[in-house]
Image 1: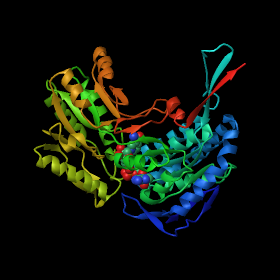
Image 2: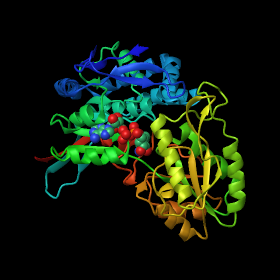
Image 3: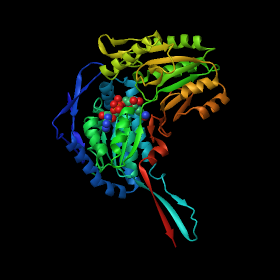
Image 4: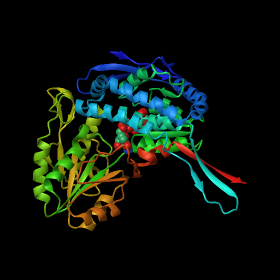
Length: 477
Ligand code: NAD
């Protein structure tokens, strides 16, 4: 069993608390590692280190800082197989997807390194003669990054790369379910000559150590990826110091299948978007609306597609998905399906907890029909391989049903009519809309939720801007 240490001020150190988090491989049930259950003292030590190093780090050129991002990318590539194997073990992610996550993360560091010579300030026209107005972009300062368990390695990079490139320093807390790959990365970073304190990793509970990171007067910005509930707590906790928050929260993405859709593309797109990583992805298709003229045909085809999904061992190359992250998540999904049935919905396929020959906390690929638009299964995030499918009569009804939700992260449409594509992009109220494809964002886009799905966002130029604040100088000459 592996034992991890906190990474504070450039060193791997024992937690002040001497308490531990046990990390379970959800597929085998084995305890594969223990990580520190850090306390306030760990959070303060990491924040102090980040504060002390920030000015000197910001004073370096962006190209110098980018050099470290490139080195991090190279280290990840050199250890890609070990990291992917560990990722598959710590969260029951199928090995193919785990490898994609590791490689994508290496690309992500490299991508943001490329921004060093691109981001810039502005020169603004003045109302006065002989005056220049310059808008400078400066790093926000010390960042607290708080991560979920579903893409633990990638989301770590999504916060670390733009923070370090812009001259911020960062203290990052991984989820207690999945600290392993982050701490393996810490061990790799410890071999670099990165200035001490610039990057720190501390594990511990969200409500204690996480709360200390959020409420400390040292913290200039909190970036959370997690549930709406955690986002709401962080908004309240950050109010005292009026700390900037950037929140990437849950989703309940609608997939709309219009009458003229290519059914093969729609069935594949909706299946892929629902079952990837056992349905535990924020931008997964969580509800599907299908035109009534093709509804029966579509349900038949989608049912066959869901039945063909092979779930099991994450290291079997034929497996499409593996165990849910833990027993609690499996129970949460099942309870939602039970309540949906009690409210009058019917299960077309799936609908039960299961195992793979006694292993794991699996949930069957499940299609639900007959659910009401205002029911829990249609309105609340399931985060499992369960899809309610509802019919609609016309374009206006489809858009109204899709927009009728407190979340606003992603959405998709399936149609062969370009006018329907353009009109629905105009009418859908979501941060992302995918057309005739599965839900999966690119690093050069901007992943940002509307309504309760978040504040601010990540990736690309706009994700970088989250870590910068402006200073305007009025220069009379
Ligand atoms: P979670 O909210 O339970 O935990 C996320 C992190 O927040 C953990 O590290 C946790 O310890 C910490 N935390 C919780 N309460 C806190 C508090 N009061 N103060 C400080 N830290 C706190 O979420 P999870 O179960 O790990 O992840 C699943 C959720 O994340 C889903 O809702 C999913 O949709 C969402 N998610 C969103 C995106 C996105 O980009 N929008 C990406 C991935 C996951």
